[in-house]
Length: 75
View 1: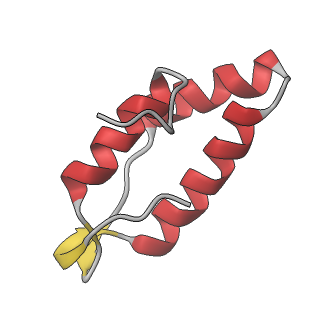
View 2 (view 1 turned 90 degrees about the vertical axis):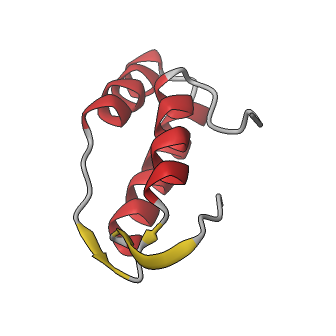
């Protein structure tokens, strides 16, 4: 699974982890509907900002890659 930096304030870690796992499973599937849903969800999702959460810029960058259907691409 993707590792994000944790900071003083950032996105809720549990919510991000759950979303990323589901999106990665959908992107890896052979079902075009699941792939399409994952891409759309990545563009629409929002996360609560909490103490000791994931770095927002890193998560946002990863969501943009999911939206393109390439979550494992390296920048």
